[in-house]
Length: 366
Image (cartoon, rainbow, N blue to C red; front, top):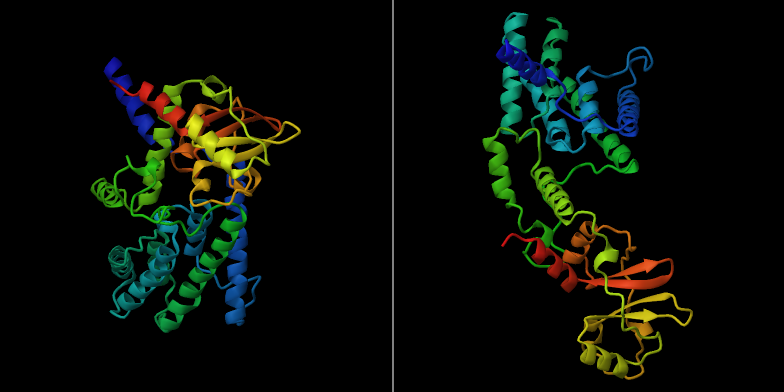
């Protein structure tokens, strides 16, 4: 009896929801975008061929509803990308048009059209589930006396798919989502072939793609999505290992600071004597004025240069309450050697890359 209950629980668990519920604002964003996208697509198709009553008979096909869902609700999905949407729908419509020419009964025609559509989408690397619906709908709506032709392929199928994609790009960008979604990560910012430091423990795109293919997940999850998932999981794991430690726990407090008018020779002497890679600048009112990096002095010989002229303006700061786990990525490849810790306008501490390396080495298994 106990085994039967366990089996039933396992079955019910497998039949339950397999994804987290989206935030209400995200659901509303997607729903509103899908509605607007379909309405504007109908208007655009009517403008191309104003032969029907727009309000009573919009030039839409039912599968566009599913395409709109993918574009607006899951814009990161490989199945929602422009190539998949346009080529998937168009190839499926063409498959149905070709099969209809054979003059077979409706049932085998519908089955063969969907089969050919799936094969075409697979070979084009344009897997788009609504494409199967396009093939089926094309067959079921066909009239023997006027079979659909290439005009139907162009309007409404291809034109409508392009309109949905174009409107999806505009809506997703306007609402903070990235679409089309890149299948590869951004190139390294240093102009070399090395991946960013936070990506160097992540398998290469080729390995990730092979893994997705082996697990038959290539149509559901993109390579870049998987890389970001691994990166996020590692960040979360680091956060758990570091516990509740904050910047206040490890920041340097006894700081050597310079003033904005400190001349270049004095800056060079401070770097030599204290062996720092950055020096904080303290304004006359006691507020934080920025950081001067040792690299800013390379090739400089003009004694009239001052700290104010060499301050790094592209600088991110933190507060004493900032968790250390949030500072790892910034120091790994954030373009700065140290993070100033501020309380209001005043500098209260500094965390350097050397500090973070020492911290992480202490948490590595021995």
